[in-house]
Amino acid sequence: MKPAPFIYHAPKTVEEAVTVLAEVASKDGRVLAGGQSLVPAMAFRLALPAHLVDINGVRGLDRLAVDGNDLSIGACVRHAAFHRPVTDGPLGALLSHVARHIAHYPIRTRGTFCGSLANADPASEWCLVAATLDAKMVARSVRGVRTIAATDYFQGAMTTALAADELLVEVRLPLLSTDTRFGFCEFSRRAGDFAIAMTLATYRLEKGVMTQPRVGVGGVEARPRRIAEAEAVLEGKRPAADVFRAAADIVARSIAPLGDIKYPSRYRRDVARAMTRRALESAAA
Ligand SMILES: Cc1cc2nc3c(=O)[nH]c(=O)nc-3n(C[C@H](O)[C@H](O)[C@H](O)COP(=O)(O)OP(=O)(O)OC[C@H]3O[C@@H](n4cnc5c(N)ncnc54)[C@H](O)[C@@H]3O)c2cc1C
Image (cartoon, rainbow, N blue to C red):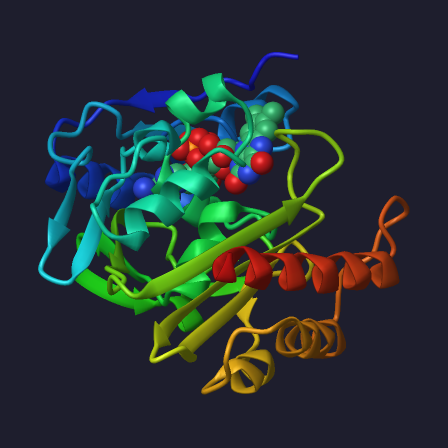
């Protein structure tokens, strides 16, 4: 199938982009970034935008840089930009490791980090990273700029706190201290498929014990989230198999997994338990 007709806009500046968005938001206007989710949806006529605001020519949106204590990721930064570490510390290594689990190479050269966050698929790897590391989302509109914390940003499956006339211009991820260990583990049927369940775990290793642990789970509920009960089990403990098993069991008890005909809820729960244990083991390795 071919997409339904639409009017195409190609702004050159952020100001132009948000001005056009303000005009077309109430007329089924949508932002076009990498097009790797929106264009297939249009081809299947699952999405019928009357206007597309293509941000690929907007100056400055491809910025990827360290800003103070954050890594700033502009709206046009592609998944493939993270294939190699973009910072010296653990954050660069973490992003590089995770990036390779997203779709396939050609999709990673077009799809954008911010597009994944705007799309908010429950099984998006970048959404899990943003939720686990407490990213900040920077949204622009003709009304001004606002920064949205990850806990407020993800509202449900494919649903975020972004208003229809807002452009997600930047995502800010906090840099990780050099003593941070991380582990990411994902299970999908085939390489490049969306995750059935995945876990990102980080902690600092100070004098042999784990501090500031973070355990985020994605692909199992409508939105990715940290599991505070599992983090509490890790805090102050030495990395050990029995501690990791206890945290993974708590994750399995704390989640309410989505179920479907292929992957029932109890199956996703078991996979999430296994992914959590393996992510923690990988962080300790
Ligand atoms: C075969 C296939 C396999 C895939 N596998 C995976 C996978 O394993 N993991 C994964 O995470 N993704 C996967 N994807 C999706 C891919 O990562 C997309 O690139 C991503 O979901 C959306 O980014 P995009 O830049 O392509 O956004 P687009 O498709 O251009 O837009 C997606 C949505 O977000 C909105 N949007 C985009 N950017 C902005 C912005 N800056 N501000 C406001 N709204 C915006 C659009 O209006 C649209 O509603 C896959 C896609 C395909 C086709």
